[in-house]
Image 1 (cartoon, rainbow, N blue to C red):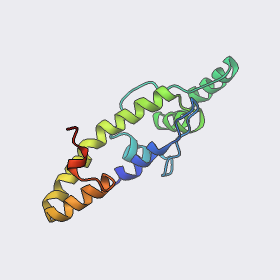
Image 2 (image 1 turned 120 degrees about the horizontal axis):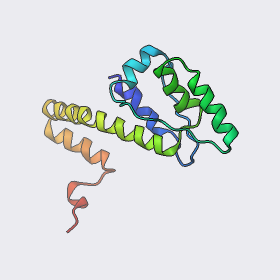
Image 3 (image 1 turned 90 degrees about the vertical axis):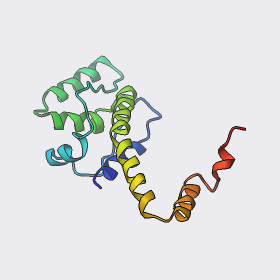
Length: 136
């Protein structure tokens, strides 16, 4: 399940406009193709900067990167990915991964005894039963 590795990047601290994604795999062309390309779309990623000089320096560094995969890792890790770009990436990843997660849950629900499956779901909810979530 290679997408489990990709999911971990969502734990990045994004409470600031300066975001650096700590990828849990080596930043290579092969890993980009395996872990990023399945869900990424051609979108402009922006980086944060404090001064015009800093913006120009980062832009020059970005333009000197010879390939798409190198630019992607440069922006997400070194150049301080802007919060809006992080949010966009996060949304794209969730859109891609959610159907896969639901498929796995469906397969599990068919393989596991319903009582055990219900206990697992109760544990995920923090010990609350389905009736404790009702609005009535």
